[in-house]
Image 1 (tube, rainbow, N blue to C red):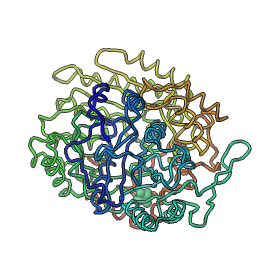
Image 2: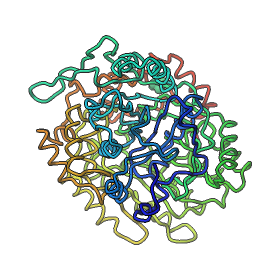
Image 3: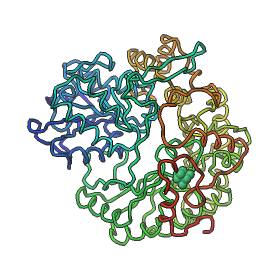
Image 4: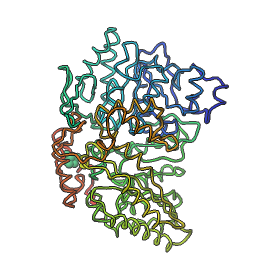
Length: 617
Ligand code: SF4
């Protein structure tokens, strides 16, 4: 398959669809036994910025009998042209139709991409519902953060990968290879892979509901399916990707990326990533240095991002940054996810003084009280000290993230945001040089599965709007920019992330009503979503705005992330009591549950941290 020039002339950014990028791999289709197509169900520019897919792309292509290609969601202009011309969705590398692949792998990183999954299957001329696919269709698999509550997408996905994909994917391929050789029905494969830890085959489970709509039971229907699916954890990070595909057009993260560590031990109570990627695993400095050099040589990048959930927590980040700057003089380092504390001041001191891209910090809450509740216990003076150090070092652009609607939040906490931003701005005015630019990015708290706040009700739209209006009024001045997503988007995100299997009908209905690219405000159609909920006889507020009893059987109860419900309940209670839980990496083990899987979890942290206690900095 290919797109004629005539088609490409009709769409914006045709390079999204042409493939042939630097480092893309085209293996011999006819000589390769297993063909996989990987996708992030969003626009090319978003999908190409995802850091998980390049890892899997490289891993799968390194198998001699496997080829892995890519495809992303066509933007509506391309979709219209494809439909008109009767062109099915095909891969970027070999231009084969998706329906000719053995396996289609979706990365689910954001609930608002769910309708795009359906749309892509439809454009590929593959039945959207798993129950309507037969043995001739590809196996549709999904992984990523959203797979930790797989139920809303259970009707569409044949099997989910729960947790780190690197090892389990290879085990899955072993079973697939075996099954393909036999030419047996798909059902047989599903039964077999259900025995692999970390693989969830939703069609092998039955979900029952009580009269009040709560989940009554989630039961395996075959002996191969386990009552609890354990998250997979790779104990050692796989080699870094050093030859990623380099896009021809600008993408969101237009730079090289080296994953320096996976996981975070801070224990922020709203943060799902902090739970579902535990424990912390670091890459050695020498490996990072080598990877950066190879990235520059293989891709020509002059900027690299040190990827981590909490970059400042890498055990010797100052030394790493110094070494990188020393080895690669022209490399600009991007340090996402810096903590707004003294460790970042120290880090700024190791950055070469001529490289001053903007800095981003996430205090998340405006008052020390609320920061204690969410376990992001940073005193205000430390925040101000960090901001002052940034201004002193010539940083002008500061981005501050705050979350609205956090549990127990009051108007005083909102006032706290304005006061804090005011103080930061004043510090910037006092510093030498140009007027500071402060970008205040507000998000809405979404209670996520597997977090201590998974039982909490999301705040209603009216209250959120009132808080937003107050902030708009208070922070309206030159040099401060405020941004805030539509709270309806967050409501939908909350409903989908905490949903049960019945939401499949809602997602299907919304897609049939025309919903795609829901994360894009110009495409988000809340009315259609409400219509889909109504048609399915469900209420979004049942999922988003209902406080759940601690005894309720949650729709994701069968997904065992290793962190126990007892720990989450304890953390929830400590939040309500306003009690901090220290970072287990630097203090004692908090017995989150992972110690049952990895008894030496804390000892490993001790080996990583050369007596580094940042509170003493
Ligand atoms: S087992 Fe202990 S040390 Fe390991 S992540 Fe959990 S709380 Fe931290």
